[in-house]
Image (cartoon, rainbow, N blue to C red; front, side, top):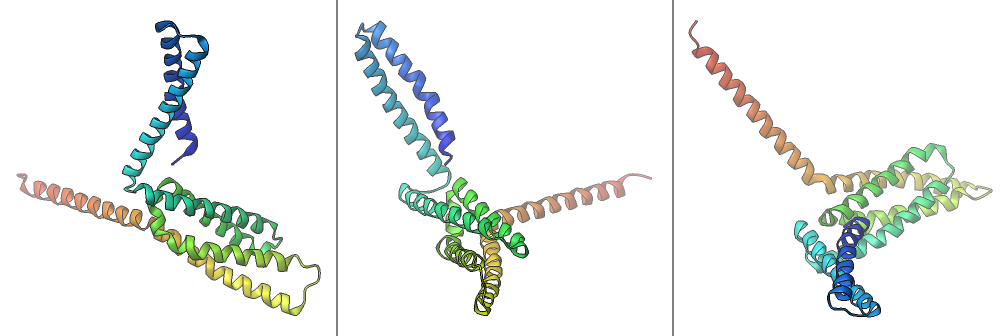
Length: 218
């Protein structure tokens, strides 16, 4: 759920409600300004929390999640956000042009999966391999590669380790691509279904036109 948008909606509802409470208390019931302000503040807090609860409930219903599931997913998303920040730092600290495209691909895919899961939390269950295995592996390997590549004097052993790390990162990039496909697999299936329906409709329409043309008197 978008925190900024939620804050805007809650504020949009809360501020007018608190203002109305202030004026009703002060002018309608002739309370003191301090008491009216306290009532308005308390009312605003209550309205803000009620609005938040309603928005959360609708969000969970829309994505078919329980509160427990959402807390679990949100916890893992917060942890992965920190890992992706660490990955971002490592990727752009490495000064190695041959691996630049690969590093950009890794960052693009990880951000894409994270953003899609934040927008639609239920996708988390399609990306469990990413969150519980592949993300950790790519972060650790990238850190290792960054550390080795920054050594002022490289030995044969370091060169071999750098090569092996690059090869492993290549395999991990492919695994990340498969993770992304898993996340969007339902969308792909839905699109293919819509395409099949459209093709069937077009074929049916063309068959109908052909039959009508054959029936017309010459």
